[in-house]
Image (cartoon, rainbow, N blue to C red; front, side, top):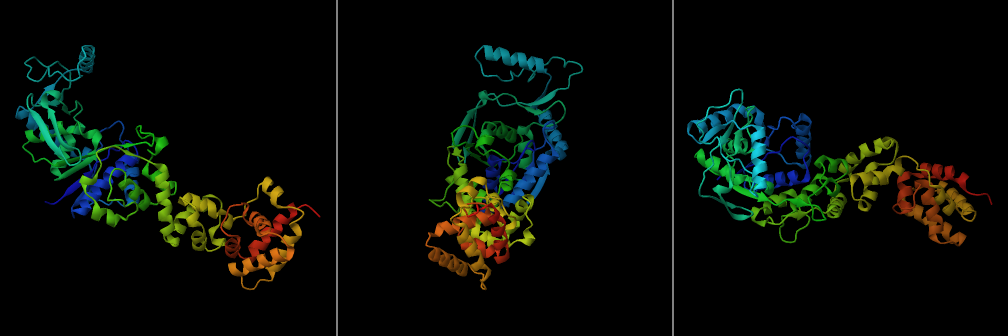
Length: 466
């Protein structure tokens, strides 16, 4: 069998974590079986669908590397197809026009709730002989079987059985001629030869309805796999506060796409105890039977840690390109500073995101003024002559390498009879404006002799006079 999967987002918002994971699983399954992955935009919600949302969804998928073999297809370009099939169902007495008004449907709902019944359409126009009311545009409803069961084997959840008596006659075509989700989706999957429908388990209740429509059309059924939802770390529905933001927001916050892919894959799926793996390994190992039936919990700290592991291994040149926009936004002239790739190499094991990497690199490209409390703590009468002596020694250094710089500092420490931090910490504050940086010899090596001495000299005015 030629495996064909699809991802079918609704362009009513951004591509969020849950949608991205569903897309990833569909993509990985198709790639594992050398099949095709199709992208379809379900844009029949005319009030909420926007071109901006489509742009953000496509941008997010591109950033994650979820390439598709066909599409994107748009449902609004297929209206004629939906209407033709609806007409076919009408002619075969498998669908009917319903003229019930919104007011009637609401009254029906209220009466059922008051009686302790499950709200559902009562089928009043199913076999009605009454004359349709004038001026009312009807919807087209499907004649759902009244008896029997819908049975299917979900590739994740197992056997599922639903009584047809639990299902009402759903709307296929709205009064404005636009299809409902449950109707358009099965025709799209049918026409696009989708073999495996992998989607969130919020759709599992729609599946029996869709199966009945497909059976009415004498159409083949795809395999279904409903992926459990993602919860916040607190066990509640995932919210923006707990990570339910746009995939592109993670990009803008400085995460690497391969780290996010790795993390999403581990949300509800596993391969032994493997925590860190490549896309190639994911494709090789992926199978639907290893997806948990229980909801996964989103852990921002775990994603943070995983991103750090990928940063450590990433190419310095690639990271430099990613860091540049952040530095430029922070007023840094990257061209005039030290080799950015070398700066990245020095800093990348100390940070968790590209944004943090950029923040840590700022002082290499523009001086940062130390806070007053740091000046009071480290710029003292006692260490002023020591630092002046150090500056004179540094001027004489011919081979400006960290080993040489460290040796000069050690000589100063020994000659003045002080501990290393009494020299290194004031120098660190003078040249970086901070107290937490990589080793001072490595920092000075990248800054260069001229810039190091210029910064130290600038800060000397803040030292008290002896």
